[in-house]
Length: 256
Image (cartoon, rainbow, N blue to C red; front, side):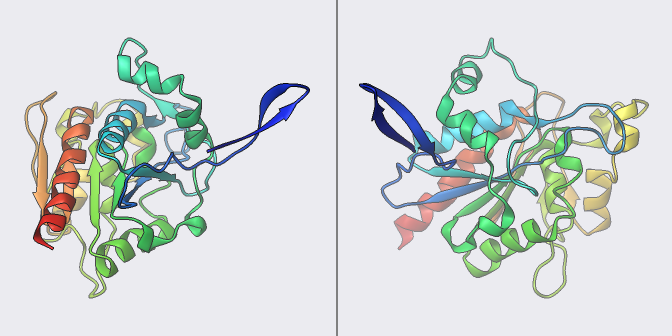
C-alpha cells in the first residue's frame, strides 16, 4: 500500500507497506518462506531464492484473490536468482514497484501471526538450503499453522529442504510416512563446489526420516499431495503446487 501526499502541487509517495495488496474477499492469506542466504554455505559462491518459483506461485495465488506475504529468517531484502526477463511474467513483476518492495522488505518471524494464514509455501533456489531449515521461529510458525489452524505446508524444489526438520507435537517428523517431492540428488552436480557446501541432502534426509521421496524425469512437472502437505519437484511445478493448495482450500469451503 502506498501513502501519497501532495507536495508543491505534485503527488509523492511518503510511505509504503511491504504487504501485497489485499484482494481476497475472504481475507485468505498465504505465507511465502524465503531465505536471506546470499552465498552457498561458507563459500563466496553466490546463490539466491528462485525468482521464477516466487513469481509463478505468487501470480497463481493473486489471480485467485489471495494475499501473499513474505517472511525470511532475518527479514528485509532477499537475494534473487534465476531471473529471466525474456519471460513475460517475470519481467512484469521484476519491474513492479509494489512486488519488488515486498521482496526488499520481507517480514521477520516475530511479525507473523500464524492464525492469519491458510498455508505456508517454502520457495526454492540454492538459498533455501541454508538459513531456513534450522530456523526455530519459522519452524514454530509453520507447525502452528499446520497443527492448530489446519493449514497447508507446501514446498517446491530446494524449498523442500525447509520441511525436513519439521516435527509434530508428538515428536514425529512431518515427512514420516508421507510421499514427498523436491529436487533430487540425482539431478545435482555432485562434483561442483556448490554441492559440497550443502549442509545435508534433501532426498537422503527425508528417506532417513521415514518419508518416501518421489520425482519424475528432469524438467517434468511433478507434484505430490499428502493431505495438507503438498510438494513439488522443481520450478516447473510451482504453479501446479499453488493450484493444488487453492483446490484444497476451495474444497473446504464447498464442504462447509
